[in-house]
Each structure stands twice: as C-alpha cells, then as structure tokens.
Image (cartoon, rainbow, N blue to C red; front, side, top):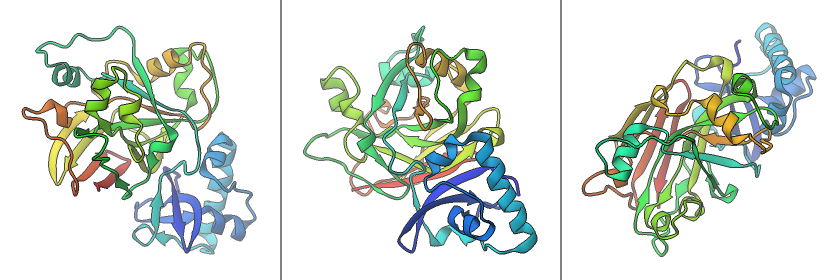
Amino acid sequence: MEIKKLITFEDAGFEQWGVISEDGKSVYGAIALEEAFFTPLPEKLVEFIAQGSEGLLALADSLEQNEKTGAVAARPLDTLHILTPLRGMSRNIFCVGKNYGDHIVEFDKVTTPDLPQYPIFFTKAATSVIGPNDMIDSHPDVTAQLDYEGELAVILGKAGADIPESEAMDYVYGYTILNDVTARDLQRNHVQWFHGKSLDTFCPIGPAILLRDAAPPSFDVVTKVNGEVRQDGSTGEFIFSIPRLIAELSKGTTLLCGDIIATGTPAGVGVGFNPPKFLKKGDVVEITISHIGTLTNTVK
C-alpha cells in the first residue's frame, strides 16, 4: 500500500505511531509491523522522520510483506486515542503572521491590505501543544478574548541553515493542521505576540502528518465553530510561499528535523467580526484541511 499519512496514537496504554490505511479508516501500528517482520522501526515518530527516505523504504517493505501474509491487522482509528503527531518533542514551533491578504484586511481594519515585504515570524511555546480532542483551556482569569486560527503546518524532515528557496521543499517532510489559539487582549497588551499565543493548551496539532509527496498543489482550510463556517480559504492565497518562508527563516538560523512552521491563517478569525466572535466555554472548534483531516478541540 502507498504510504500517505502517519499518526501517533495510544492503544491499551501504549503510545506508538503507525501508518494510516488507504481508506483512511484504520492504522497499521509500527510496533506490530516491527515484531511481525523484524523491521527496525524507531519508537517515536520524530525519530522515524529523521530517517528520511531510508525509513520510508523500510516501512514500505513491511507493509508489502503484510499485504502478502496478513500478519498484522489494521486497527480501526475510531477505537484509538489519537495524539498530537510529534508527541513528547520540544522542537521549535515557528509561526507566520499576516500571510493572507484578506486576513490583513480584517485584522488591521483596513479596506486595502498593506502587504508585508518580508514574512512576520513569531513562535509558540512547546508547552502549549495539545492533541486532537484535547480540551483548550479558556484561561478566564488571564484573557477575555479567546480566538482561533486554523492553519496549515509544515513539518521539516531534516536540519539546515541558509537554505536556498529553490531547495527548500527538499526539507519538507509533510503537513499537518495547527490551531494558533490566541488571547487577543494579551497580544495587544504586550505589543508582541508570543505570550498571547503560548498559554497552556493554545497549540492543538494533528491529527495526522500527510507526506509531502502525497500533498496537493494547494490546500483548502476550513474552520468551523459549533458547526458554523468561520474560515474558508486556500493556501493558494499565500502572500509568501512555503519555499520562501523556509528560505527566509533559515537565513543564519539552523532549522531542525521535526521543527514546525505554521503558515498563517485565512480571514474569518473571531476578532475580525463586528462584533467580535470570541470563543467561550463549550465551543467546539473544527479545522479541516483537504487531504489531511479534521482537528477538533473543545473549549473548557
């Protein structure tokens, strides 16, 4: 079978990773494949990513053997606890502000966007990461303006610095979904964006990693709150392409395998409405990106 998506999950108390079946309904666990076919597969998904094409070839060989023998049964995804893909890592989470013209219009309250000449970079704390279906803490004692931002996130597959734009896609391993949860009042009060975007639980990521070679030319990004469509954009609207982002960010800075780059959010965030539609306790946020899946979290 063709390897398109990788996922991290918990089953019977054991945390592991695996490859999603072609129909998208089940997963073949790495532990079971390793035991059945004596294929050395690392314990953590980020370790597997670091193996690059060598790791993918070994995994593909195990899956090919399994198609012939049926030794490993696929586990239904709906019976497993899906975790954030790069579980337990503390890699950098780089984010990009104002990468969609329509979002600049709503955020800056202007009619014509003043497009940046260079990408606007900031980071989120690794301690803010949670997984699919985990609860977003509303932090009511800290913020009164809780907002969402659905984004395509890039997963880097190898380290590099001063990466030419023409070679940047060679460093992309795959893609996932990221919700850049934001406390707008903190973002405004502190003038910079780090603190307002790094409170605990403010970085849901998942559910799966779509491999680069299985990705479409562009992705549709749709965010719903309690079933209401709030954001409906396409990465084809980027101001700065993924290669440009990687090239700019890596100038004099070493990017690492497993680093995440959130590529910006389209129009439709809560602060952009009049009056604003900030999140409240009980709200369900669903971010769907074509070919990857849906990242769902509830506010508590």
